[in-house]
Length: 99
Image (cartoon, rainbow, N blue to C red; front, side):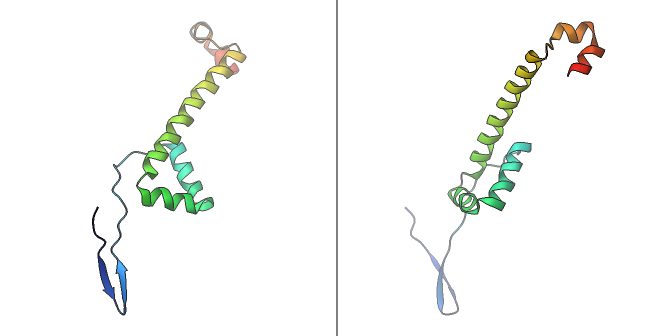
């Protein structure tokens, strides 16, 4: 465990604190939406995740979960509307109208 160091600011000693390094990641649509939501509506959670160095991990989990759910919902909607790959191959006009 590292000893906490301080710097002098006038009459005050200010701790030298730094946010932990996180690996750089490319954030998708849902991760960016979650980040904006946290910044605007849940600042405490946003700051806690940021200072713990787990914000990017959290955002990537959100992105992965949202994409998995979108794939599942798309498949369920296609099945409910009778859209199949064979319909797509045989009658693209009808497939396009139904989708």
